[in-house]
Amino acid sequence: MEQFTEGCIRKVCTECGTVNYQNPIPSVAAVITDDEGKLLLTKRSVEPQKGMWCLPGGFIEMNESPVETLVREVFEETGLKVIPGELIDACSKIGGYHGDVIILGYTAEIIGGELSPGDDAEEAEFISLDKLPQIAFRSHTYFIEKIFSK
Image 1 (cartoon, rainbow, N blue to C red):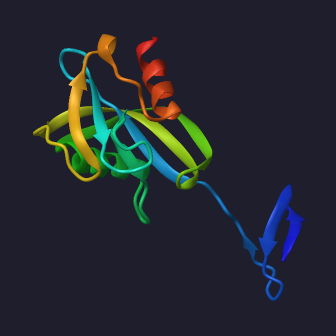
Image 2: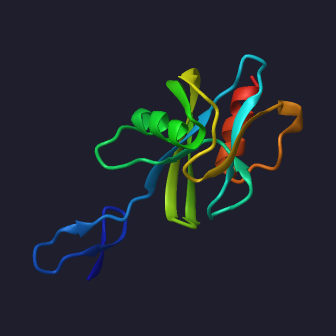
């Protein structure tokens, strides 16, 4: 049944009283530049926003920290090994393709690997800031602007 608890309507088990919290899915995105100041972007090979460019990143798996996810996702999508840097900020997308999502934006530094698209990226490329394509997600645009407007 549904009842008002902790400030909003939530589903609650009528037998044991356990609250069914429906929280956003956590994810990460990485702002990474090369030695020339070009930004690493991936072209999506899957929905949502298939064919558009975005920052490398993805969903946090069970038993994985946000920075572990960042390292894994960047490698899966670009072939590059990174060290996570500073947390840029957090954003949310309510009612999106995958439901409600919270996105943590981080900087990261390349420490190895070879640029090669993989996983759900059909392309991975360093792009000059003055030639950036339209970015697939508002949160990614926000992270990019927050870093490069300093």
